[in-house]
Every structure is written in structure tokens, then in C-alpha cells.
Image (cartoon, rainbow, N blue to C red):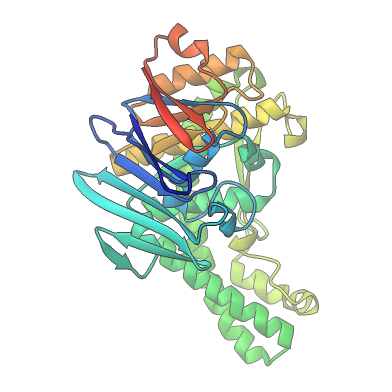
Length: 382
């Protein structure tokens, strides 16, 4: 249900209450001054929740707020300040979550160009203290860039997962980025080779460790991904997942850094290492990403997200929230139903948006909780 409060100036604030029973992860989500919304509190039902409304009504913004709480960034392009409702000084997202039997109150605000985070009423100094408490796997119309876009998208996808499942990854990643920053600064200033030798050694040690964690996760993720793609895009044949570490295969990273130093000095940056890593999907019927249609790229990216969610559940013992924006876009009815069948088979809390409720949900026998979104208001439909 929702409550609308109107002040003396005619401005409305809407509270939307959303609860899932039982509570695998989140029991309530509140956002204030995010995009077109004043105050909204969401209360989803168990299983699949469908948010419907016209284009531009704010459906995506509901999912975006949830994603921001889990990632400290939007899945939309643009500056972080674009999240703040026009005329408002800041925006806030709050949630009560259950994780492994423990309940936590989480809050994240964008204030004066910086993030402010709280966990159980206490301000936290590092965002990761909050981000570890809530997992949201998001899929939006731009997610096809995971397949058709640059390597940065795919590295971020991989590293976000490692942040949650590998306790050592964050420290190693920071250690590597620090060494990379120092080495690049030395390359640009052309200082003594003694300092470069020291940072080369540090970069190689941290880089090899980061690479090892990535390889280990990909080895576990690959079989799940193949299973998803066999269901979503069986017509393309069995997929091959390939990984490029960011330097020449079969060579030690420290040797590559030493050999490429003159070239790196001339360019002013480090050309080899895990910061250049990438992974790719190859199908017998579409050997390169240019051979995929936009719909096929979307299904490939969705398979990546669903396989990621499934493996997170296996490792952590609970499902992440799954948020899917505009599911039907660029999918034919056959493939849309295949995805719906897959969603029906998982025990995750799922939020899906669309301009209307697809008949596929009822045709598949999938019970849904439906909400109508319209320019800052959100109403639960009976």
C-alpha cells in the first residue's frame, strides 16, 4: 500500500511499503529524493515482483536505487549527482536486510558530492562495510554492453563478484592499483630505474595474485554460464568462455614488465597487467560478438547475470536480489518465456519492470506481486 502526503506548497511525498516473506535478504527499501521520487518505501512480495508503468514513469529509478545501495553507483551512465532529485540537496536510500540469519539496517546518501554510509545506525568509514551487506544482481537494457562493449565492463562484472566471495580480493586489488598508479607516475616522470624496479616487483606480485583469483572464479562460473546459455540461446551452439589475463600467455608478468619498459616509458603508462584483462564468449554460430544480434547480446548478458546470481547463492548460501529492467525489450515471446521459466526455478527475490504485465507470467503459472509506477508514485495492484 502507499501513503501520499501533501505539504502547504502542494509537493507530494509518497511512501511505498514492500515486504517479502520469508526474508532471504531485504525486508524494506526506502529512497528519498532519488530521480523523480520524493520518498518511497518498497515492500515486495515473495518471488517475482512486477513494476509496470508508461515510459518515463520512474520504474527504472526504483531498481536503480536498489542497485546504488549494493554498488555505490548507478547502472545508468552520467554523473552521480544525476541521482539527486532536481531541487533537492541530497538523496538517500535505506534498507533493512537479512543475511545469514542476521538483520541489518543500511543507509547510503549522496551529500555534497560524496557518499555517506551507515550500518545499524553507525556511520561507516569505508563503503565496503555497507556494500558487503547487500547483494543486487541487476540487468538493464544497457547490459548488452557486457557482451558488446569494452573490456572494462567485463572486468568490473568479474571483480564485483570476487569482492563478495574472496576475502583477500579487495586488499590485493588495492595493492595492485596502488602499484600501478606509482609505476605510471614514474613512467611519466622518467625517474630512476631503481624505483621502477621496486614497483615492477610489487606490481607483478599483486597482479599475479589478482589474476589467480579471477581464473579460479571463472573456472567455477563457466559451467553455470554454459548451462544458462544452453537454455537461453541453444540455437547458437555450445559456448566457449575464453580469458585474456592482460599480458602474453605463458610468460611471467615480471618478465613482461621488464621487457616492455622502454615502450611503457615512451607511452607514459603500463601496457600489460590485470588492468588489461578481458573475457569473451564464442559460439559456433556466432564466433565473434559482431555476429550477435542486439537481442542475442542481451540474452547472453542476462545468462551471465543469472549464472553469477546462482553461483553467489552456492558460495554464500543465499540468493542476491535479482533486478531486471524492461525484460521484454528486444526479446521475442519464445525467448522471453524461456527467461521466465528460468526465473521461476530460482528462489530469489526478483524485481522486473515493463510497460505492462506480460501474459507470460500467468501462462507459465508464475505468481507475481504487481505495482504501478507513475511519476513519483508507486501503487500496489490487487
